[in-house]
Length: 427
Image (tube, rainbow, N blue to C red; front, side, top):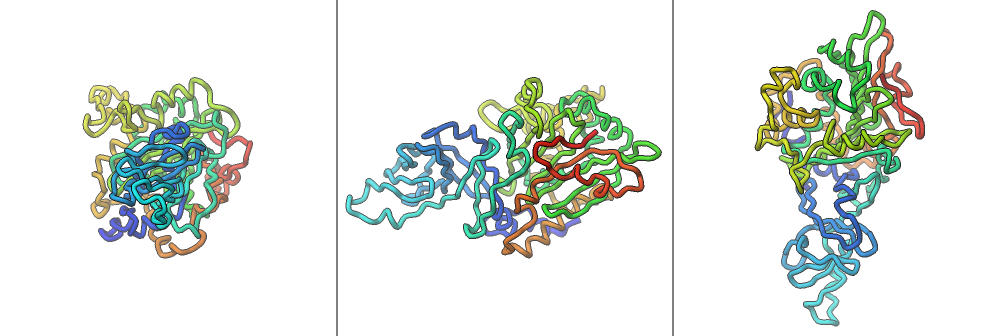
């Protein structure tokens, strides 16, 4: 159980907060590349870590991410004109390039040097893996661009989506770390879900609802092992990688199904972007798999038209069906693995009061993740932080049978490391 002060420290992510400063040390998934479809396309509002920003792609395809409000009279640049390699404010015509330089000031005298003294806040951006990433921290500490496995694959080998989650990032991320809920929240849907069907692991999840947890630190964060009984000689292990600051890799179900992953990125202290990724390291996704993902199945979501807000949301009680719950079509009466997760996480309130929790042995991964976040806050000026180096990111999760006497991290061995061009281990 956290104290109130510890909880506040972990959930606040604004510019002047310790956790906000920590998150700004990492490259941040800011928006889908499809949101800026081409040169001089419409600007897009972006809110990250409590900061209101505007993204645009200029005439040469370069990406800019600027403070939303013009340096002149603070009008929103959302209403600006994206033209001729810059974003021009619609109020008085001040124009900014992707680096935040004021390149035109038509309301001032032609010989004025005033514009050379104006600098709009701007954050560097890169495009990789279907995602536009930004770095919001000290320029001198900017790390290498992320090399998470899914981000390095060809376009046909991955599918990336995002959805609005109406809660603090931490309770969303802790849901990704928590393996014990799978036996309950998703109990009646594992066989039907396209990412889980046809695998031996499903029967172990249903048969043993009391997993034993072992957790080990890794260079990037934590390796969390959930152990269930399989037979007289073996345990079934689902081993999750948590990579700082907010990534999880879902233990796969069978080598024929794609891997999964998440990122939980704060918009502000009461909402976050839940990024969901499916990918396969050695083949392109099949048409039926893509169709299911595009339909919002599995870890993805169906949207309110024209938005990234889930169609099932708190305003409609997540389209809960009590009859489906009674008939054991779903455990909670809510359809879809994604909605089953975020409905319960949002039910905790916008910011969970962790002073009311009573944690058990199955919460070992969550407890240690909190401790690791708190510990890292004491070393914000270190050049290397957990999960910052690309080598920390080149890992995998796994589902595996191991002899009962074998320590999980030792037994899983190479299955926990990414090898480019090679398949993963899973049952």
